[in-house]
Structure formats: C-alpha cells, structure tokens
Length: 360
Ligand SMILES: *[C@@H]1O[C@H](CO)[C@@H](O)[C@H](O)[C@H]1NC(C)=O
Ligand SMILES: *[C@@H]1O[C@H](CO)[C@@H](O)[C@H](O)[C@H]1NC(C)=O
Image (cartoon, rainbow, N blue to C red; front, side, top):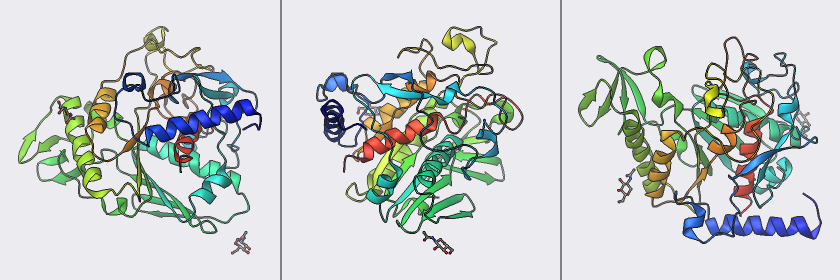
C-alpha cells in the first residue's frame, strides 16, 4: 500500500466500509440498506492486469500445495493468469501483509471447515504466511480430518477441517445417510477464534459422484429431494449451531460463498462444449453473462435470518470471471475446472479475508 494521501483515503474509506458492515452480511444488497459509502463493495469489481503479481509466494517452493493444484509444477505453459489483481469498484484492497496478519492474530486459531474449496483457501493462506516469515519455524500436523499448521513464535494455528456437508453423513444399515438436521462433529469448532465455513458443490452431485443414498430429516428418510431445499435445511442446522454457540466477542465467523466452476463455455459466451481448457485470461469487466447459482440465494437467505454476525466472503462473481484460473488439464489426471491453481485466485480470497479482519 502506498503512503500517498490518495491511497490513505481509500484505506480510510475501506475501513469505514468494513466497520459499518460490522463483520456482518445479512444478504441485503448494500445499496438497498443505504448505510455504505456508495459503491464500496469489495466483491463488485473486475480483474486488472498487474505485472507485479504473483506477490505472495512461489509455487515451486511452497510445501503446502496439493500436487493437483500446483499448475506451474505440472507444466502449465502460460503464466498470465498469475498476473491479475482484484480491483473493487471504488475501494482498494489492501495488500496482504503476512507478518502483520500473524502479529495481529497472535495467539489465535483460524479454522477452515468445509470441502476441497475450503482446503484450496487454506493452502493458499498457508503459503502466503510461510512466505512472509520464511525463517519462522512451523509445524504441520495431520490428524484424521484435521490439518494444523502452527507458527509457534506467533502462537497462530491455521487449520483445515474436512467436512464437505457441514451436517452429518453417516453409514447405517440402509446405506449412506445425509442427516440434514444433525450436527454432531462440532467438537473441533469450539474455542476457535476465526471460523471460515463453506459447503455447496457436493449438494448437487448425482449418479456416481453422489456420496449419499438417503437424506434424513427427523425420522424420515428420502431417496431424493429438491437439492436446494436439502441445502437450505442443512445450512439452517449449521446456522442454529452458530447462533447458539458463538460468542461474537471471541469468535468471528465467515462463510465462503459459492466458488464458480467452468465446464460449459456457453456460460461465458463461448461454445457449450468448451470447458476451462486453454483459457488463459479472465473475462473483462465486472459482469458475468451466465446464471446465478441457485445456492447463492439460499446462503443469503439463511445468513440473513441469523442472530449472530456472519461475514459472507462473496467470491461468486470474482470467481465466475476467472475461467482461466483452474488447473484444467494441469491437474493430476483429468480435467479440473472447479478447483484453483496456486498461486492464483484463492490468494485473493485471503486478501479479502485480511481486509475484513483489519477492522479490529
Ligand atoms: C527453528 O528450529 C530449529 C531446530 O529446532 C532451531 O535451531 C532454530 O533456532 C529455530 N529457528 C527459529 C527462528 O526459532
Ligand atoms: C428467513 O426468514 C423469513 C422471514 O421470516 C422466512 O420467510 C424465510 O423462510 C426464512 N429463511 C430461512 C432459510 O429460514
């Protein structure tokens, strides 16, 4: 960040924006509420070419990147996709400062809970922090579904807890049962200072990719149901846990919004048969021609009814614009147009997380 009065102004505007939002997103558009400085929405904007990027770490030296996400190592020939900065319409995203992040969050636990996109963001943050303090020792510990990276000098732990649906998936006599109103594996969520949840893409899987045989609500089993209805019941179950267990003075809660996938070119005005393969540049401008994900409205509806503040990291638009950011055929076999290369787009999610946390 520069020291000119211009950028200072922008920072002040940003901080005002964040504090007036008080780490809360209730799903109304900011304009409708009329409480925000005009146009200062971190999640509306466009991608601009910035040759100084990638800023935060080097793909070949970060030890935390899954082989399938390390696109440069996997031989991806182009690198322009690394050189874009998210540019909100009328505020500036502060640069991520890993050392400052660790100092500010001294003694705290940060936990990502969710699916592989949550893991994608965890890996990005792990790289960003490690790169900021390369001489600081760290420990990495994996225990069942929980992965913990600690920086002992700062007392900071960054954790990933794998939990694709948030609610319980249990194997019983009848088969695999997804219990929409049951949440029993929450012991790891307690005592965490910053919780960042996500879940979405597993809910729309069918056929071979579907990982359950029945939905259950109360005592009733359903072979199938409207997926958005199921998603809504599950998110409501999660929201009730947050509302009754989280003390906002101690714990900040985030929800990572729906991350875009790019398997059908017609969503970005390309031929339908086209997926993310061969895409080397983001969409220009700040509008995505394709449809909304039905889950976006569900997330906003559920968050809007909560009594505890949850900050929505609303990454849908900014990911929709990045058909170039996926591993595509530089994954580990197959074509991956849903996860993200690292370095890459999730680094921006962490810039946004950092901006939100700068509030206090
Ligand atoms: C890191 O750990 C090593 C081995 O335990 C130790 O020798 C070194 O002093 C530590 N470095 C820092 C910066 O604490
Ligand atoms: C949220 O509250 C509104 C108004 O009471 C209600 O109509 C809606 O169904 C609620 N949404 C959820 C997800 O519970």
